[in-house]
Image 1 (cartoon, rainbow, N blue to C red):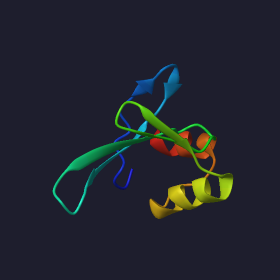
Image 2: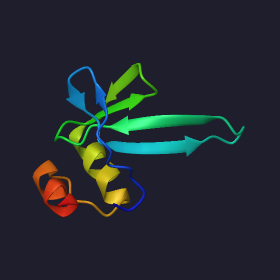
Image 3: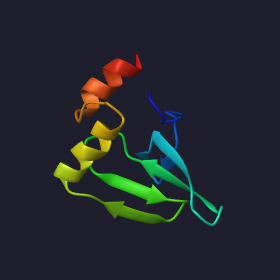
Image 4: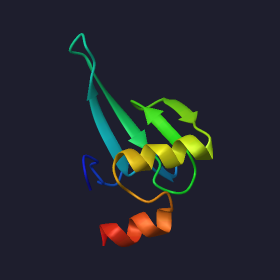
Length: 78
């Protein structure tokens, strides 16, 4: 799925199936877990959670050429 690892990851009881591994300019790395349901949730590492507005959530999925709808993304994943 175009740069996202869709392995099942859970933080609490929420599924965060979109996994981005980012390398910062100083060489340090951070893992960002993206909630793949229809809410705009992001978790950095294992503790810091953020919610982004629906418009930004749609833009996030667009970066990877994926639909904004969780149902449509699920269908693509098979």
